[in-house]
Amino acid sequence: MTVSGKRRLGRGLEALLGPTSVPEAAAAGTLRQIPVKSIQPNPFQPRRTLNQDAIDELANSMATSGLLQPIVLRPLEGDKYQLIAGERRWRAATKLGWEEIGAVIKEVDDRTLLTLALVENIQRDALNAIDEATGYQRLVDDFQMSHSEVAELIGRSRPSVANSLRLLHLPKSVQDLVQVGKLQMGHARALLQLSNPKQIERLAKIVADMGLSVRETESRARGDLPPQQRKPRKPKANAEESAENRRVADALRSYLQTDVAVTINKSGRGRLFIDFYSNDDLTRVLELVLGSPFEG
Image (spheres, rainbow, N blue to C red):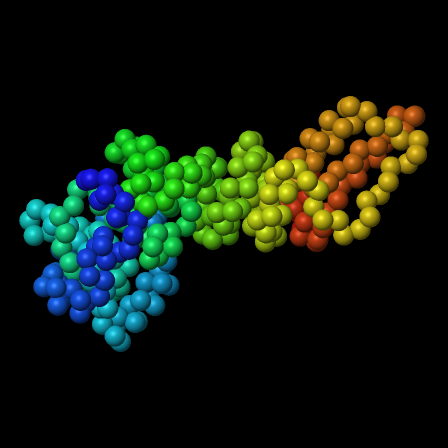
């Protein structure tokens, strides 16, 4: 594939996949009716999960209006075909019991198959950030491509691809939150400010449970104090702060992801202050302290 060919991949689905409507494909003479049962899924499909509700909704639409956009296939041996684009349409047709579906056939290699699937999903179906990053990583691993080559192939900037790939360093549980839509890419990138996986997981849960904004997530990841809902309590005048007190407070603040103050007076007696910002936040802090679910 030439460099100019690579650059075209980022530009529009019609240039990549051919006519984008059934009438256009029919007019171009490229539309074929392919048996649904002879079609195999794309092994390079970047989308890990398909929303069943979306497939059901599409099936209802296709039952009423028919197929509006052909699927795109590549031929295999034995009159079999493999999906390049249109898996949801194919699954909807299967659900409806269709025997055939309109398709455009293209001869492509494995690298192009993955690239076309990525571009189609990014441009048409808004891939979640983790699935997009996983697709980029497959181009790097399976086809020994550099970040710059991936960027040129997909039609993105190199920093955009590099930042996307960094999300794969997040713990698996946090990646799952991104995939199901409880965290957005901005949240995930903010969490990368933390280096400890356990801290990342704790803060990710807080963000998802409390619905924090990206800016609030960035602030907490930096260790800034959350917005105060009341004036902080002042330590007593005879309390003295030592390096050890600060070390303990910093450790608790990092673990609990909330503001913590430790004070000690001249006799050696002290107090521990832990801030919380809602009933749910109090329950979260108690469960961390107790090490078990709290039912108040």
